[in-house]
Image 1 (cartoon, one colour):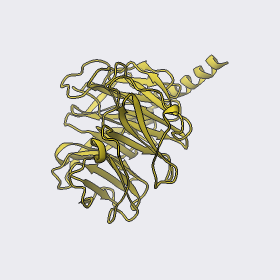
Image 2 (cartoon, rainbow, N blue to C red):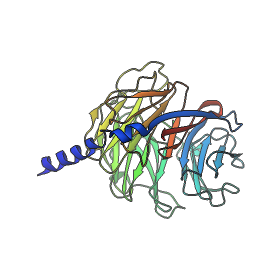
Image 3 (spheres, one colour):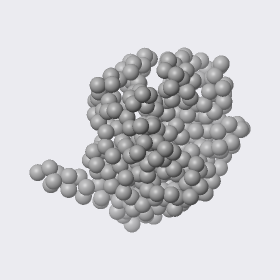
Image 4 (tube, rainbow, N blue to C red):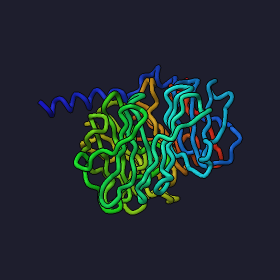
Length: 352
């Protein structure tokens, strides 16, 4: 019965990768570069809807639009202009969190309820060797933040009220491999789906692995993937279409060629993984995003070598741009945004 059930799930999902004639006519991917006037590296994007988008980057920078990208407000968090905000999560035009990455107390989480006019410091790491990479939320009260392992133990912080953060017990988290952590590249090494499920991609160990939870981060399990692994290699981004179908993306950080396996796919919520084709751009994948509401299961990825997309689950890819973009996100099939070095920003549309 379990085999038949899994086959039914795979068959149903596979049908989503077969574009109808009408859907194929609507597929019209394009990118248009914009400018928001900052020289800082932009590293993460959080899309609330087609009108409201938040960005975050280095030098304490964050940006927000509430009119679909026609105008942007760019600012810095007070007394935080030396921090690198490598992740952002927004719930509305007013409510958002920023996460800075860095050793020890440079890893922090800030929160605003007034569109970034004021920020409160919710969390500051007190572990000298910690380095937080990404965070993600299920709703306004429940979220998790992930750090590289320290002394063989992952550090996963959890909030259940949207305000205070507490470490998940080591007893509920698998032990780390030597040197294992993740990459604070795009704010997508952690992702959530629905009300309870979440995943974390790891790297820098002997195997690239994915941690998974089905209880809002209270307990975690781990699985191996075929993504390339090593001291500077592994998973930098994870993306899930639902609680079963997902992808892990990565590569060798700093590589200028497409070395090794960069993409793996799961049909069973992350318990097992299969190798998929790597995008035809050089270097690793830093960020990824599901295109919500698309007529096909469309997935886009970004990295120093460009932006690419697939509509067949990762069996084939098409390059959309060859400039460096670190993160990408979508609010709808026609409204997406990609960010990168030197304040690079582009509007991305997959379907017309």
